[in-house]
Length: 327
Image (cartoon, rainbow, N blue to C red; front, side, top):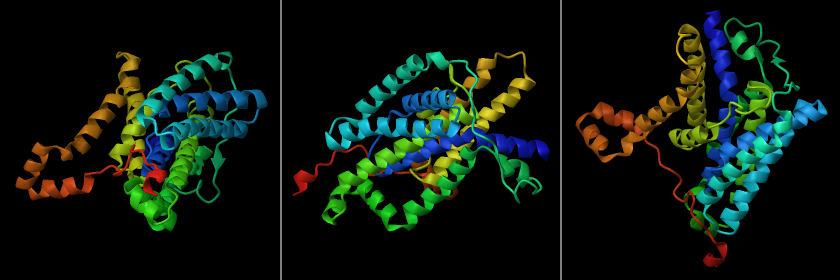
């Protein structure tokens, strides 16, 4: 029982940065904007967070710095995409390469240095509970932030007028504009807010989950996985968080198997979660293929399962919108 509780605690900790990144991109894409800069942004934010914490001795200042980096990168996407109408895919891809190289170049003086970490919070009343205590009673603040944001964004997107407006902007921007909604303003605002969460994910890596900075940092490739999980999650906060924790489970399982099979190369277990996660995403989303739908018609049970998992992207995702053309 203790082993299971500690394993679940490890999954929550390992998955927290990925949850934050997927929530941020879910919010951005719900507004109709694609931000492909996640991978580079996470690395640059992680470096900035550790560097600021190392210099100041304050990890919370480092965490604020990571949020600022995320918003700064997202602001470029917002300017080049929604405002100037340039290709969001091209801008995001270029940014992720630029941010990655900047992170390694600017972070070189801080590589392999010991620095401050975010403290572990002990929650009174929870830490003493059987089974639940070891899972939720002693965790990094980023774990609690990621759990709270998951529930909050689920409620906010589907139970508030503001959430309805952002979904309308991502689905039917022209209809939303006709009803008086400031489409461009909302797209820019949620691109920045989503970028802030992506930056926070970077800070969570270097100040809590994998403290320190180096090359490799351990966060490489996570941004691309986050983008895939957003699709897997159907642009829904709860399902996106579930996908993030699934990937974290694969990572924790890889560490356990590495201990059980010491004769196998260590990189095998470090890389394995990525193809396994991609295969899972393919299996879940193959329901949109014609042959699978034909098969589903023959088996009602399969059809019901398919209807639960089938996802559709926001209709206006990545599309340019010009208010001046609508007047």
